[in-house]
Image (cartoon, rainbow, N blue to C red):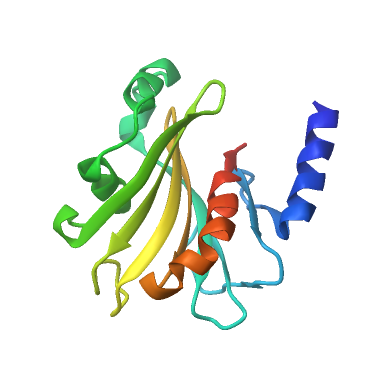
Length: 174
């Protein structure tokens, strides 16, 4: 296990990412190197902002009482296939008519599944007065969700796509 941790640390350095563990000890994520930590975020939300301030990535772990009644096997049975638009709208808390979902997949992480997708949000769908394109990942566990997302304008998304993918794919519950 120690060898795996060392290999992951080496891989993170090669990708230009910086390992981060939240203060509550709920998750780790590899945020883009050189980005500025965001302040004033909601409790439990950790994030960074690009040097130009136009793009950000964040991660969090939220307690979800409805998941506390399920076993991990029950959750895995539901999440072994990619989530659809309605599932993502529910997770993000946005009206499904205000978003598009693409590039969805379910990744087996060995004992849990990561849902991952690209979301295109209409202006004001998430509080931003502009359209937003995001890459998001969600891991459901008994009692909680761990998620990460990176957000920018649709025009900038393609140039940041690989960085977003590496960032959100790195999120792991502790």
